[in-house]
Length: 163
Image 1 (tube, helix red, strand yellow):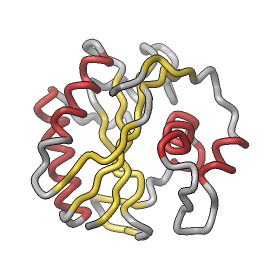
Image 2: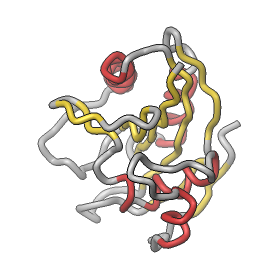
Image 3: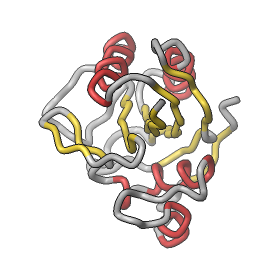
Image 4: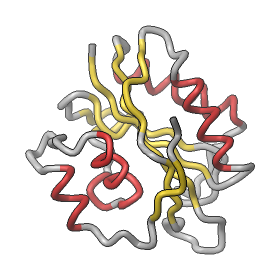
């Protein structure tokens, strides 16, 4: 079993509902168990500010799937939610599911980069990760807790518990 951390985000079509529905679907991925879940956070959008604020969370999954198989399952959940992939990397979206970490692996594949390329720079990833796994170390040896304590929160705040 591998331990994967998945970032969840939404800022369209009732973001709280989108994330709660995605969490329910994560629980049904074959050969995968939802093992932990952060609180739900409000965050400001990255990039263009002319879009609604986001809701974000992080889920920990125990999985027998390969990283690309898990990616396929996550993209299927995004597609079911109505996600439309656009060229605008930081635009509004109905649902975004990103593999942040997969065990202690470093993956550089055309479809998947792990650790997620922006992980160390995003408060809406670091703080939820530190909430559920404060002892976590990145493959480069950096501590999630230390990174989360050093980052500007950029207005990030807890909205509610997800379970």
